Amino acid sequence: MFRRRNIILNLLLVAALVGIGFFGYRTLYPKVAVAVARTATVSVQDVSTTVSASGTVQPSLDVGVNFGTSGIVRTLNVKVGDKVTKGEVLATTDDRSAQLALLQAKISAQNAQAAITTAAQNLIATDATNDQAITNAQNALTKLTAGPTAATLDSQTKAIASQNLAIENATAAYNNALVSQKQVEDNIALNLIAYNKVVDRAQYDWDQKCPTVLAMGLDCATNAFSRTQVLALQDAQQAKVVGVTKDAQSEAAAILAVDSARRSLLNAQASLDSLKSSQAVANQPALQSDIDTAKANIASAQRARVNADNAATAQSATLAGALETAKAQLANAQTNLDGTQLIAPVSATVAAVASAVGMNAGSTSAGSTGVTGFIVLTDLTGLQVSASFAEADIVSLQVGQQATITFDAIANSSASGEVISVAPLNNASTAGGSVTSYTVTFSLSGQPDGVKPGMTAQVSVMTAQSLGVLAVTSSALTQRGTNYTVTLAPTKAGVAGVRTPVTIGLKGDTLTEITSGLKDGDKVELRTTTGTSASSGFPAGGIPGGVAGGIGAAVRVGG
Image (tube, rainbow, N blue to C red; front, side, top):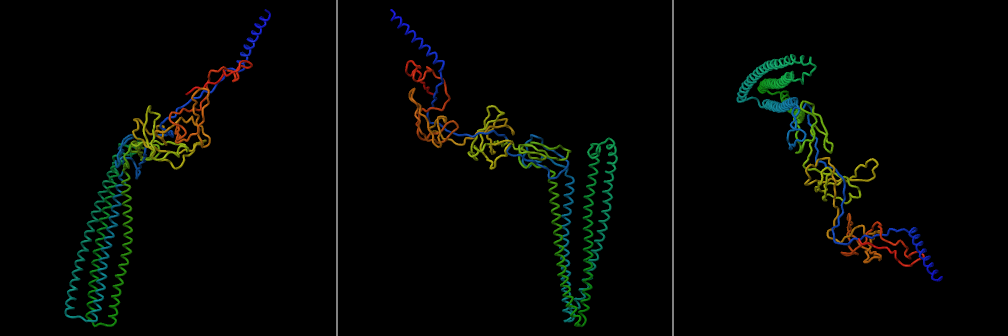
């Protein structure tokens, strides 16, 4: 009885100890987290790498157009948003001063050309006279040595008569030139009176209205009440300048004609005197002194010809220079007149206009490039995207690569693009920036409606791709230097995976190409975070001081 009671007490004591030990162990060793391994299956897939950046939509072309000649805007044929074609007249400035300057330049060029023509004609006449003088001197020498004959005397008589007739003709021509000159001068005087009358009348009309405008504190030149009289006065003054210029040209031509006729008369008289002198000498017995004089006359006439030719050459050079100057001034005047028209150099859209009709032509700026001009044109038909890529990405970009582009402001938008340029120099660093970047420009094709310059765009470029290759998730790979390994998943729980070396190809964004070491269908472990699995919480040896065994082994979960 006593022994049986002791056995029961001992059993109760053992049970109490086991309970106390289990409770103490749970307190000291609570449930712990064990690793949960996820797996991935090796399969044939497409592997690709991409680089991305944020950019801005911009037009392919911004052009600032300016007037070649400054002035008041006379016409403005476009407004912001208008589409224009190449060669279209966009605007004009007041061209009246330029028109007058061009007319004066044309007259100057014509006068310069006329001076060259006259000089050439005078040279021909002078050469003829000098040649005749040389011939006469040579004939005189011949006659001195040969003596006159009956035929010579008859010829001398006819020559005198002919020369007298030439003098009469030259005298008549000279008198006619004088009469013509007088008529031109009279006409010029009458024209000047007419010009002044028109100008005085316009000045009077202007004087009548301007004080009223000035009394109101307004500008006579721009006020509508007096502007008609201002323009009439300007037109009258310009008409007077043109008329006086033309009259001066007519007067110069008349004076030139009188001078030419006078020289012809003098030459005819000189020829007659020379003829008579030569005949008198020819009819006298020749003296040695006369022969020497005749020879000297020949030499003198020859020198006169040479001197005249040299003078004509120098004059020709001077007149040619004056003509070139006049032509240059004419070309400049034409350029200034052309500059009063603003012509579209390309087909584009008007982005900005600097001022309005009646104001001075100024300049403005618009567009992503900040170009300036009286009118700024932009090409909205060929939009581009400019994006900055980090130096680590720029090495994989090249012209011709395709890109996918989305726009932040347009939901569910997408467009295709192509790399058209890669900047050879890096961008200027921003304050405190440490990342080096380069600008890449993309063309746009099939852009969504509503895309405008200045919008933010996201650009993605596929830089490499391997199609239909054996691949695995990149997180399954472990790298040691240049070597790569994976851990093959165990076929049953409680068994460790086998680490296996592999050879890789293209490293994509999420997948990596496997060229050797694995086959299609293999399962590999991924590098993962830890999870919680059921466990007894006991060490591998079992309950402390109690039952031995492995009731707390970890469980591996397949992915």
